Image (cartoon, rainbow, N blue to C red):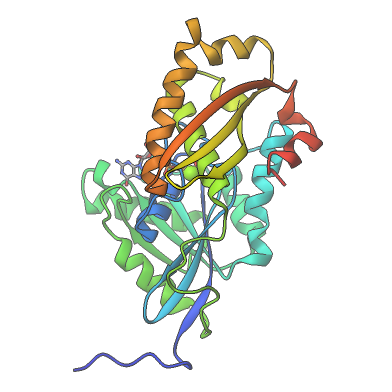
Length: 301
Ligand SMILES: Nc1nc2c(ncn2[C@@H]2O[C@H](COP(=O)(O)OP(=O)(O)OP(=O)(O)O)[C@@H](O)[C@H]2O)c(=O)[nH]1
Ligand SMILES: [Mg+2]
């Protein structure tokens, strides 16, 4: 039987927030859905700090996925801003995907359940990291436990890392979206600037290269982005929150900062497909994570 043709009346579109505890695999899923690396991924918790839109388009639908920071109980203003990005979904999203690391179902008193209730939207459960579970039955058991704690509209078992279950998830989402036209041209992937993606790639390498609390005390700010014919000239500040962190950032004879620059440049060149001349500077902004004006100027609104 020929596939039913999508018409203006049957085309679907909507906004879908991806939420869950830190490290559940939200950004891994987001990138898999979009077929490209828009969000940064590390093995460390609280990698994502912003709400990042990514546009999934096919002949039948357009889904604006919103990657979000992991849900936590905020301890300082930056974390409050991160949680605002999640709570804002209440008015901006049609539907949520709640991603759970199959090995770590949140406890009944976890802030995640409260947040889900607060958002008042239909939620699809995604039991992730199925590749690390014994078998399908173990994943089904995780889904059943989650369903005792929240009234999900549907559930999917997946491995975002291996790309398993992605198709099923997209089909499940599409069936629940309202009819409507595309919001963006179908070949567009996001509406954030190249400056933003570049600063994120540097932050990713920073998370991977530095230990303990240092990555959590830093942000990256692209201050100059100039395209020449053959090469992009990019200047970026690494902002730290204490003067003692400046030395750690730079390392002996500047070796650590140099390494960060080399690794970041490779990632940036892969994203842009162009040569990059990247310069990094370290700047101390005492307690920037707790100050509204700094947060605002570094894009944490
Ligand atoms: N084995 C396995 N690892 C996964 C899977 N999905 C994600 N990971 C890993 O889990 C870690 C966290 O992944 P992220 O995608 O950054 O998780 P996140 O939920 O976006 O984390 P935050 O941004 O910190 O909230 C990374 O090391 C991923 O490679 C999966 O399906 N299987
Ligand atoms: Mg993330």
